[in-house]
Image (cartoon, rainbow, N blue to C red; front, top):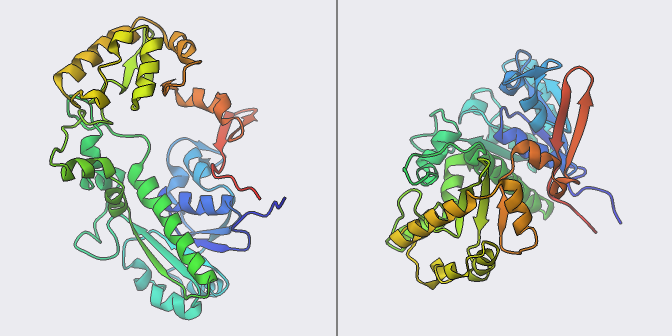
Length: 357
């Protein structure tokens, strides 16, 4: 059984800041790549000072930069630029997240880098891509998911968009899409091809994955916020408040799971009122049944419902708080905890993709 990680021997130069790029390169480090994070000599990555600081750096920075070697270069300085170019000659990947055109202004654009290393994969992560009318606009996750139509659908029945604490634009649109593009380009290089420039638009990536709203539009029936199949329009896929103010997640989309759920609820009479049996998504009967389930789940605590559903294979689970999830047996092999004498405890979550041979 080999212990060598799949990206062992790959060298990555990481010029990114904040969240999307650092997460992409952190995953590469977790998979065995040598990642050199290059920051300016001043404050460096803005993430260093975002949120509570321990040991001169924020927990946000620590969470997305594990496994990297840190280095400081002033890319406006000719000698430092030349130092970076020398590193490019032996690198496999360079990732940056400046606004489009900044690398060219620094004398470090794709045409320059590919001359130094024809096999280099260069990835540029930006909000709206390297070209087009929005290329130079600033943005954050809330803007990207807003433009892509995702935020409008991420709403309750009152229609007010809810702000997700999982940055869909930054992490799906930025980190994961960048990782996908980089790895595809690396495969092409390893098969004898030339290096590639990978242009990642976080907004475009969210749009490309906004599948269910696209399906609704193509069906001619775009759903109102909070009333689609996965956003609250059916009782069998919803969240319910418990007696102690917590919530249970019911994901019984398939008829067999819904029927098993009704058995646990001791309400077999509800089995025929499933969306697969003709119930209108977001319709009056669906909302009436949702109200019945609201009353049912309000009768027991989270712990009581969790115990009741423990032996039933019907996609019903407790909605855990983060601190509870960190201690849950489900993540025993993924999560680690370190205790600090003066600063309390800190947690870390490992690379979720496992490799075996």
